[in-house]
Amino acid sequence: MNNTTMSGGVQTGGQSPMSEKEMLNDLLTQEKALFSTYGYGVTEASCTHLRDVLRNNMDGISQDQFNLFDQMSKRGYYPTKQATPQEVQEIKQAVSQLAH
Image (tube, rainbow, N blue to C red; front, side, top):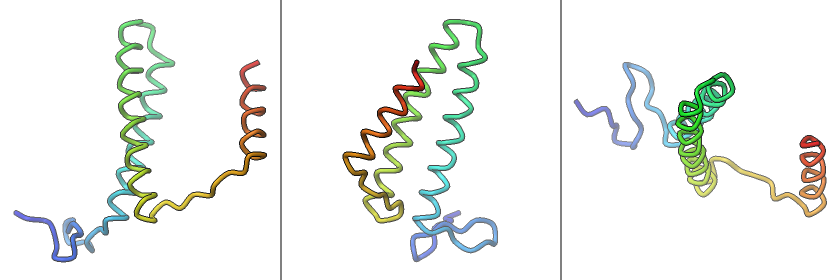
């Protein structure tokens, strides 16, 4: 059964087809949730090997999330504001203060 409509959206059980933007946004949201779940697992795991596996998976999820964001940004689905040098410096200072 082919669930793809002529417009390129995906028909989902009687609902309106999802647009490309909606599908990418849904995937991005899922990747973010998955990353958070793995983060929780890393902080709760007492087994070093399990922590290493979870961190390795988080690296992959992080890359997947960035790739989705990048594709959305290129298509104009995820507009971002270019930070000024002053804003970048302020964030660097704030983050460095958190580390101390």
